[in-house]
Image 1: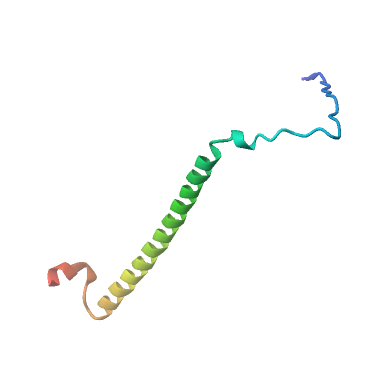
Image 2: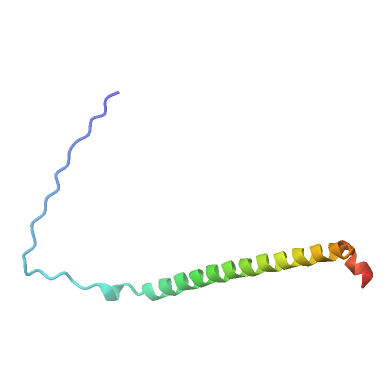
Length: 83
């Protein structure tokens, strides 16, 4: 199978050395809203990561407590019956 492609030649006139590019920075009025939304997303991700860390720490502590109760001869799954 043979594929043929045509070559394209694109040309343009060189701008003068004194040509000033227009400043369109004021045209993007959505930038502050986009930046704020991005910041909120980053903060939410950081908060979720911190919550996961705290949940993992709480789980480790609960597992340690359950193990200590077993060593004392108490079944942690039956604590509600003891209380």
